[in-house]
Picture: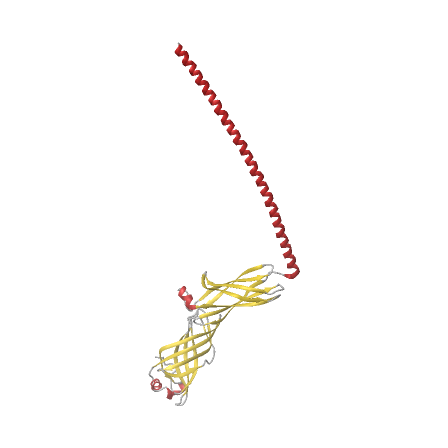
Amino acid sequence: MNHQLTIKILLRKISFLDITCSLHFAGTCCSIDMSSYEKSDVAEREVKDRGEKEENKDEEKGGFLDKVKGFIHDIGEKIEGAVGFGKPTADVTEIHIPHISMEKAEIVVDVLVTNPNPVPIPLIDINYLIDSDGRKLVSGLIPDAGTIHAHGSETVKLPLCLIYDDIKSTYIDIQPGSVIPYRVKVDLIVDVPVFGRLTFPLEKTGEIPIPYKPEIDLDKIKFDKFSFEETSATLHLKLGNQNDFDLCLNDIDFEIWLCDVSIGGAELSKPTNIEKKGTGFIDVPITFRPKDCGSALWDMMRGRGTGYAIKGNVNVDTPFGPMKLPITKEGGETRLKKNKEDGGDDDEDEE
């Protein structure tokens, strides 16, 4: 009985200690939680107060900057109104092709720039690009392009150059004789008081040819007057135009060789139009001395064919402007023929 009573008393003490410890621990936790909450609340209030102060400072600073910007803007408008500053204008008015040869095309772009300001404005840089169907043909930069006078307009000429070998080596589908579309893009950069640097993007489109030299053949040679000292004859030339545009032949400058002997040059008697992908015939009078030709002339007069060569140039008008194109023929063969009144046969075929 005594042992049982002792055990019961011990169990009660242990339970009491457990309850006391639990209450003490709970109180401590509550104390800690309350303290943390109070500190967190204070920190939040401090952050909030600091944020409000910074916002007030930013508002004050922003308001000051806005006032300064507004003041500068107002001053700028007053200066512009009083002095008469304004934005210049620019436009591509025309594109010229002053020179086209078998090697290159020279292009001049006319840009009209109008300056409404009371002071000259400098053209700082001009960037240019020529492309065809999105493919770059040529590009570059022209620095310090000049100055536009005050209260005036001026046409700025931009000289550009297309090298055909560069184009054909880059784009193999662009063949001689074709006509390709192009677009010229120009960025005109000027420096204007009050406004600062301004860039004017400009562009214009058109077409440009890739010329092909005419094919030439000596169809016939006919006597008009014959003597050993001087003989006049007419050269019947056949010209083939392989271009996608017409050629109006205005002048021809060439030299002709018979059996490696030069008999001189000739001039065109009248202009001739040759349609695109077509053939034309021209008569060219020539005067030469038979005694300078050696045996070659006598062989031709006996009805024997003889070799000939032609080298020179033709001056033609095209829809794209005048061109000077080369003409060459080597290894050809022809015969001299007399007029009907001299006993010749005009209808005889050439050998």
